[in-house]
Image (tube, rainbow, N blue to C red):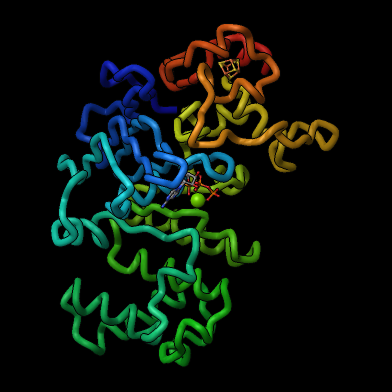
Length: 350
Ligand SMILES: Nc1ncnc2c1ncn2[C@@H]1O[C@H](COP(=O)(O)OP(=O)(O)OP(=O)(O)O)[C@@H](O)[C@H]1O
Ligand code: SF4
Ligand SMILES: [Mg+2]
């Protein structure tokens, strides 16, 4: 397991910057103190609150958390896709350049071959007025300068790779002629067409049956081996996360609350929320009799409670938890937890 290391003195309440490779080489991606908020009729809503992490080429990070924890907003921010009145603060350094504040033209030089995303809702990301084949071939022609015939061959190959049967005949079909699962596979084909150096996959296999899902996960791992593509895999499915990622960041109420090696965290969580997440899913609960939903509901973003955001749901909360927000702190070389009582949680997991 590669060590995580502290890279900065964090601002109060923000995550420390952690570098999972600790190799001394410049990271592919360094996210520092990322905060995203939105203007709503109830005031500003903080969706992401001081998230920091780094990612090396070839590394895989799963982001886990309940609905509304800020996973998709984090992913979209990395592609410069938060539109005003949404507001992004902090730094997103991709290959050494901070892309926060870049205009669309500049962002488009990074999107595609640099960073690419499979969106959670595939219905939005295919253009309904163009055939699926022309969407892939145009992308390849415009961005890679391929001629029409070669682009078409590459499009068919990509469609086969993501498991679309009779790919050649289906090139002329429009998105509405595809099922939800097929559309999702086309989105994956589009996202990997330019061989991105970082792929952000937001619940990419949720709409797919188990066999197709396994095929897509194999394809992603193969791409990583061949091209050293880095991967951020957003999911609420802990078993799937384990198939693709070596590291995990657990998010709660817009913050990373635990980070470390995935097997390690599954064996010995160091945050009560991670422990509750593990106990809430059949694949990770210790036994069927241990399986239980997480009590309570996630906080309302317009009014996050003082102290630890998890305290109203936490079975071991103390007085300190209700007044003092915990920092994300290192428990060992490769584990961070945002809990005042993390050591006790770790010990209890023995
Ligand atoms: N455009 C927006 N305007 C206002 N609030 C938003 C906007 N986009 C997201 N949010 C809020 O930000 C918070 C985080 O949303 P996000 O989509 O990142 O959650 P998520 O972790 O991806 O959840 P899920 O598992 O349901 O996909 C939510 O409370 C959401 O309502
Ligand atoms: S800081 Fe307190 S309330 Fe928050 S997770 Fe830890 S024990 Fe629970
Ligand atoms: Mg989401």
